[in-house]
Image (cartoon, rainbow, N blue to C red; front, side, top):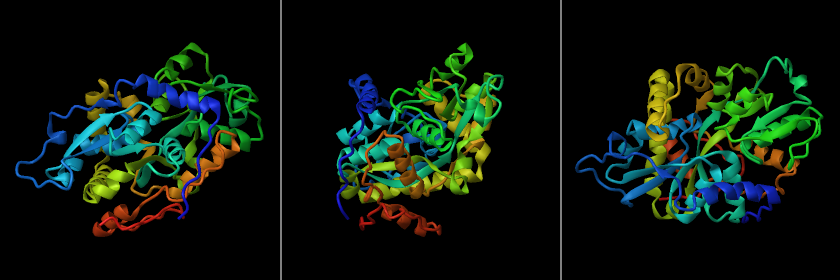
Length: 372
């Protein structure tokens, strides 16, 4: 395997990436509540090779494997006497920085920050070790102004952040329509307005945007404000699946504590199995976790449609991550990255085989080195 080449991002991406880091300079992420069954270690439980494992994730539905796995104690159960210490983040760059600093060991994260984190470190700091979720991204619009996909031309459409996963997807869709947009400024045949998901609903209500290409639950929040779904991004992908959430690990932690990593992956696999077997109960659990960690549960008119649009799975859908990187290159947001070695799926495949499940593939981008 060759080492990953350095990734050169454009100046504005560096600025965007730096902002959440500055905001989190006093500490990486926020500690999730851990004084209940979620992280309770059973009396007499045997520790693995580490006293604790620090995990990170977002209080988002696309991170429901982590939300539910922690909420229901399913991750802790697999770790025995090794205590799980959860932290939540609001942006991918800050979670990557926490991983690099050793403030977390394992994280749930989207494809774009995973690609950036891997390539910026020359392939030395992280590995993707599993998938977690697919889908959950929609183009929703003001139907009074936009009645068809062709009507998007000339309109103002929000994405969450310059160079983030949804921004890249929208820019690629625009290019495939034959329209021109300057990726940096967002100006062109469509006005791409980079807007934090927290304020996108207010921007929509004020009329300053005509729609948004956003993940759940922001898409369903906009629909609750009167927007109409115009396109589900899943319809653009083969098999209607594309990675929206991965699981990543610090390479040093993976090397030193393969048994802990394997236990977390087993907990993730079993959590996804439970979610898919008990969708209503799992949805309620995820909402309870959101209330515990973000201070507010989602109302039924938002969480119900949002939940239906997300698929929880163990397959990292590696070929779609490669495609997402290619889309960013085509948009002029990235120089072509070398992603060889970004995956180590050996621990996951060991777990899957033990559970009687099919192995998953790294699309030629992995290095399955034995970890035991």
